[in-house]
Length: 327
Image 1 (cartoon, one colour):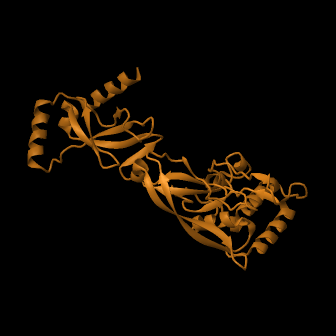
Image 2 (cartoon, rainbow, N blue to C red):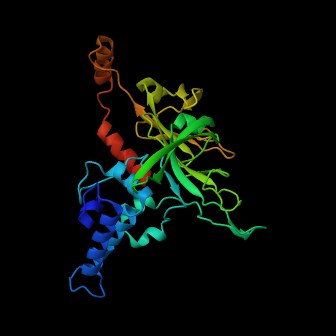
Image 3 (spheres, helix red, strand yellow):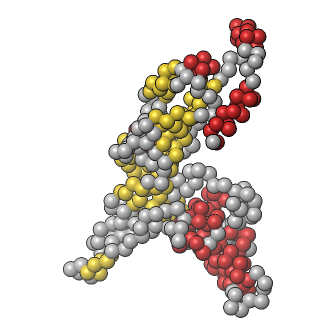
C-alpha cells in the first residue's frame, strides 16, 4: 500500500487552517472536475483531491491522520501499525467498507474498518423535538493476556473539540470497561449511554469500542485459534514425550507429542485456544532444537550417530515424505 500525503495533494502546509484547506480544495475542484477539466487524468486527480479533503476537513480524522503521518512521504510503501488509531474517539460510525469504496485502499484501511451503526433516533417529546445522542466509536488495543482473562480495565480515549480559534484540541477521558474473557480482534464492546449527549432530554448515544490485540512475542491469534511454537529436544521428537506448554493466562498445559514428530509440523489441541462459549483450538508449530556440537557430550553422540547411522539419507527421507504427503 502507498502512503498518501493529503497535505501535498491539496498543496497546503501541515499547519493550514480550515479556511485555507477549503480554499485549496475549491481551487483544485475547479481545475480537475471531470465536467469542466481538459486534463487527461482529471477523474483520478479529482478523486485524490476529494479524498484528501474528506480527511483534512474533518477535525477528528485529521488529528488521527496527523498522529500517523509524521515522517512519511507521498507514494512510499506503507503499512499502518497494528494498533493504529487506538484511543481516538470518533463521532458516528466512521466509514464502512462500502462507504469507503470511492476512495483509495489507504483511506479504507485507516478509516473504513468500523462496523458499528451510526444512528440518530428522534421522537417528539412533551416539550419540543428530542433527538437521541450520536453513537461514538473508538479502537482499544489490549495485550493478549488481558483479552484472554477479561476483567475490568481502565481505558483512556482522546476526543476532539474545536477551541475558540477553530483549532482541533484533544481531550482525554478515562473509562472503566469490562472486557469479556476471550474477546476477539474486531469484536465490538458496547457502552450504553457513553456516546454523544442527547438533545432536549433525549438519551445519550452509545460508545462502541473495537478491540485490537497487540502483537505478542510468543503467541498469535488466528480467529479463536491460539498459535504458538513448541520447541522439542531431538529425543522428545523421535521417541515421543509429554511436554509443558505455557498459556497466556500463566497456566501450563501438558501436551503429548507423538513419536516421530518433525519440525514444521503442527499439533492441534481442541478447545485450548481463546476462551469463549465455544473455545478456540491451540495450534502448536513444532520446532526441533539440536544441542550444539560445541558441547563435548553432544559431539560424541553426533559422531557415534554418524558412524552407526551412516546409511541414513536425510534428503532422500525428506523427498519421500514430501511425495507421500502430496499423493
